[in-house]
Length: 139
Image 1 (cartoon, rainbow, N blue to C red):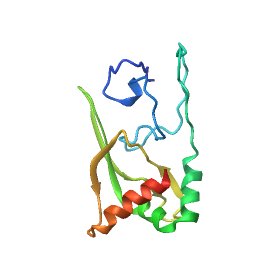
Image 2: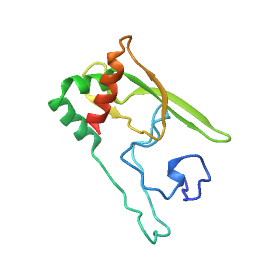
Image 3: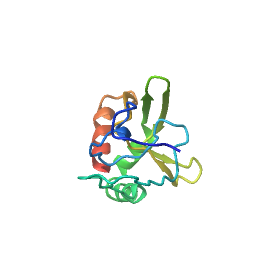
């Protein structure tokens, strides 16, 4: 169980009272949390809205509208990282992770806040541009 406060007690966006854009949590873990439940003990005087998005539906739309962008996000690995005084977690995953046999979408990992600047690109420089364009279209 985690207790979150808006006082930056950890170097993580979860410990702020700032508005957060669309993201998935725990992208820096090998196996991120599947379901999270939030219980607010003290409502904010202002703000506090939660934005929920069906990332699997968004991926399905991307696949039907731009297969190349979808395929790019299933190929390129991204490094996610969390670091504070006593913890340092790093893992590398694709934004859209498919089952190796069925090719069914299995996981979505999207978090600009925890994304490391290190991205594993294929050899061609045009793929860098394609990756960022694909990421933008997904979001």
